[in-house]
Every structure is written in structure tokens, then in C-alpha cells.
Amino acid sequence: MRNFFSLTIHGITDSWSRKEFVLAVEHFPGSHTGKKISEIISTILNRWEIGKASCHCFLRDSGSNMKKVNYIITLLHFKH
Image (cartoon, rainbow, N blue to C red; front, side, top):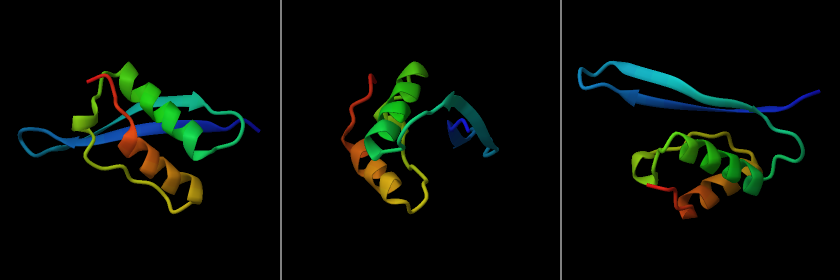
């Protein structure tokens, strides 16, 4: 079985229309640790030049690895 990671963004236009975009769907082998998930999120956001100031909320499940991601991601410094 192959595992994949996807990252989707959501936003609102100037005319208050909701928009969402899939930034990436990538093969994600191995353990799904908080550190590895944080690294892939950071890589994808940097690839799209989305800075930390533009990330207002991360939605996740309640798994312990995702709780760790939430903690790590607040410490990361993106390019912009």
C-alpha cells in the first residue's frame, strides 16, 4: 500500500466567494511522525511561496502526530 499526503488551502475572495485549492498530493512513505508531516507542510508552503503570515489556521485530526505538527508548525519560519 502506498501512502499519500495532501495539503489544501481555503480562502475568501474580495467578493466573499469561498475558494479552495489542492496545493499538493505527494507520496508519503514511512512513519507519519509529527516531524515528517511538519517538514512536508513546510516544503509545500515554501514551494508555493506561502509565508507564515498568510497561514491563519491549520485544521487537523486529533491524532498525537497531528497535535505535534500543530506545535512544530507554529515554530517554523517560512521563506516569507
